Image (cartoon, helix red, strand yellow):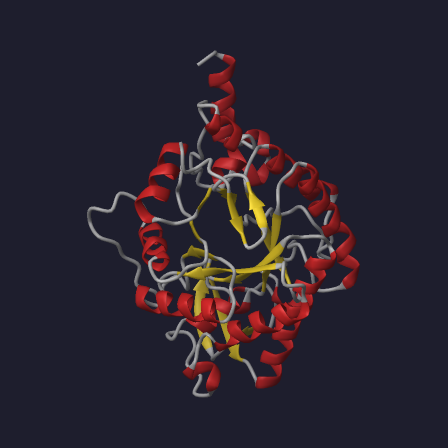
Amino acid sequence: MNKLFEAMKLKNLKIKNRICVPPMVCYNWVEEDGYAVQRNIDHYRAIARGGAGLIIQEATCVDPEGKLSKDQLGIWEDGQIDGLKEIADAVHEEDCPIFLQIHHAGVNGSGEYLLCPSDYEMDKDGEKRIGHEMTKEQIQKVQDQFVKAAVRAYQAGYDGVELHGCHSYLMCEFFNSRVNKRTDEYGQYPERFAVEILERIKEAVPKEFIVGIRLGAFEPALADGIRHAKLLEEHGIDFLDISYGFSGEDEPGAPKDFPYKDVIHAAGEIKKHVSVPVFAVNSITDARMAEDILERTGVDMADIGRGVLVNYNWAIDAKEGRDTGRCLHCKECQWRIDAEKCAGRVLLNRKRNMGE
């Protein structure tokens, strides 16, 4: 595991290994006010104690009207800073850096009036969603909210922020030309919405504060993802965390002989065109796989998500050669219902109790 446990630097930030715990929303934990609770603090402290090199906090909403669910963490008002600071402090006490992902759900939101770059209709979980084309004033307002959220993250002590630019949410909707049908500059240059936010955040925070993005690889094609990545690098992005874009309006794919997910192949292809760190994610289940992905694709970080929910000590166990456990992909995630009922966690504990 030479590569996986090799230290690196992201700008001036020291990262002890190449394991990143990506954003994963913890549903049903907070109230509608979006304020952090003790459970959030304990959760992130446990992840940090488990040995990961970097944590990116779950999608934290910049606007109460842009939440993906009613019980989502928020960073839309100054009163939320104190609770978020407790999370950042807890992680830092365990010698781990943490970024905060800032997010607006767009047409995938839970509100009554859903914003979108263009008028757009879709079905989600059996419900019809209608996105309303944003005015220039609405675009400016949301951009302001992203910038203010980044400043609050800096004030709360985070090491950086990650813009949520994939998974069918608002920023992703701008990137994807099949969703964004605008004829103005935000349609002719679909990356403009994100680039303007990036540039304004860079002006508002100290230069050592890191600003990256969760970017869709296929938006709708890989060539578009590569173009967006290159443009973002030109405008100062500090890292690229590559995932899927707007589901159903994309063209994912990889060579038939590629052994992992197509989005991991895409991360490697994007890495060939940029010099900033690139993260790969999706179904990376064990340390050997993570090591091979780093070597095979040339990416800089491997995102270990559900494996860490199963086993907070995933990184330590991987380094010491122990079974890290794995997510068993329950039809309904038992971890979100009750972590102690997580089938992967139960199986791992049973193996250890039996001395396997």
